[in-house]
Length: 166
Image (cartoon, rainbow, N blue to C red):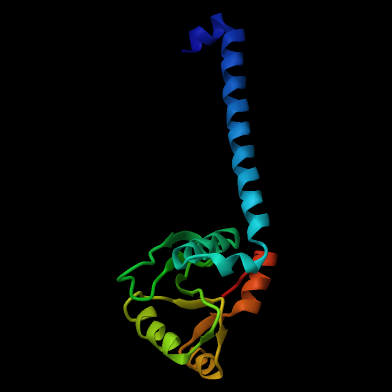
């Protein structure tokens, strides 16, 4: 290989430059696509027309751009409240329940998640993200069960800044 490069330096340089240019174009295309997606999702109103599964993917993307690692969507039938699982930037296990709807989020939603987040899913951090409006009782249950509750206004801030800390 080294001998071939010595005998044909122009060809070797051309191959290396082509590979480097290809990698650069590929990286730029990925960056541009991510930027377009981020610009589109900066307005929390886009969540109003999403399905539950699309909202879970949306929250997963927000976690990734906010520095969370190992983000995976596990939502669906039988998920027992764990729609998204990730690691916080400092390494703690994060379990997320996503609730996309326009109405009030009542305490039963929070209670069900509280019953599975730590005992079944071994969450260090339990996060419930909703596009709805949590009732006072839901907020109290979340506080008492150490569940971080992200409501629509907090979600709008997260979407616009792409910064979130648990």
